[in-house]
Amino acid sequence: MPAQRPTILATSMGFNRAREPWKPSPIFRYAIELTGCRDLPRICFLSTGTGDRRSSISGFYSAFLGRQVDASHVELFDKPNISDVAGHLQSQDMIWVDRGSVANLLAVWKAHGLDQVLRDCWQSGVVIGGESAGSLCWFQGGTTDSFGEVRPLADGLGLLPFSNAVHYADRRELFHSSVRDGLLPGGYATDAGAGLHFEGSTFVRAISDRANSGAYKVTRTKDGLIEETKLPIERLR
Image (cartoon, rainbow, N blue to C red; front, top):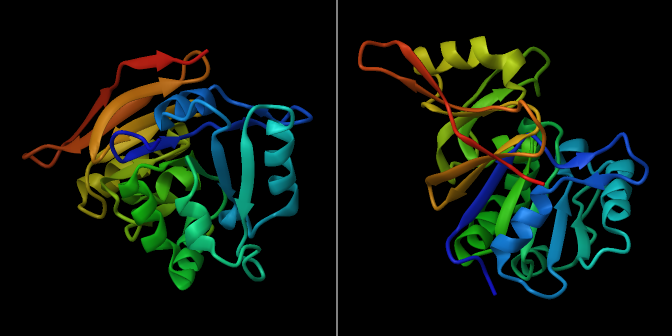
């Protein structure tokens, strides 16, 4: 059963990678509930932003070993590991995109046509989401260190017509100036451990998997000033 509305979870959380095996954040329980799947949810992992790093893919599988999840992954380096990538992604209950370089991720997805495939998945009710680069990619743009120094990037997939900033404590000043100067539209930001739930292009709620993580809405006023609003946040357990 697909999600009732197109759903995106744009987060700065995902796995506790200091644990061996990796420990999945409560964000996955939250996401699985949204899928409406009551038995063996299908979760596909995309690690394009790391160049399909083998340790990341192995970490994903280890996190769900022994859990009631049908886990799979799609890799594109140096060639796809699945003959029908589109069909596989469209058959999932949930797609989770890992951290890494959002600029490289977007370029590779577009070369393989995954930009449209993922849009189709989202519209058909597959819950999509991710961490860091896997958060930024769904928006119109955001701030990224994909090119070395942190800078604005304005050619995201645009499923969400806003901007996004992860690692907000380090990128707040740049995010504010980018919105103020019109380089990015107004949008949302998350601290480590926080996430944003959208249905369609409507913000639903902010969530976190730890104490003291914040989520924020950042807009440009008619006077050209920046207005930052800290959002109420729901702690996941």
